[in-house]
Length: 202
Image (cartoon, rainbow, N blue to C red; front, side):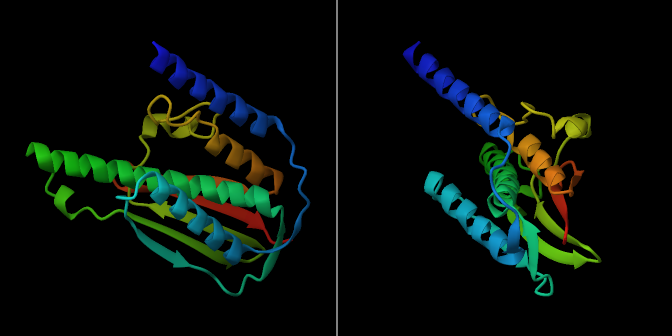
């Protein structure tokens, strides 16, 4: 009982903190920011955070930064939070698929592709006319079509209870919208997902 009280207490704490973050209007100021540098910084932050939790985790990382972008006018800590959320989710997706593949190999009920599965996350930036596009792509399990229209709703999560309050994508969507941008997803169940941030340059 004590364990359950402790577990659900921590969960309630995470939900309340998430709600407070959600309701706070940003106090940050827009400033000219090197988006490539920002993306790379938060990618490394996410990697370190994950390896600190699970030192067995490994994934192929691919980056492609468009050097012609220059600086764009954003609130760096807010967009950084969005990038961190998307990368953390991508790592979670490939890790879950990898764990499933390993488990199926041990039980002898392996899908033929399980032994060959290599977790991979890629992130890219690209200048398209008056916009910058940031893509975070994973080769995880993808998002089932039946929940696709719910993923940006507050408190919706596909993670097990206690793994996350389901506010990351909702908060990310609001931040990108506040910057006059778009946050979209393309996904194929069983094959992976790609989250696309589009931000205006000016």
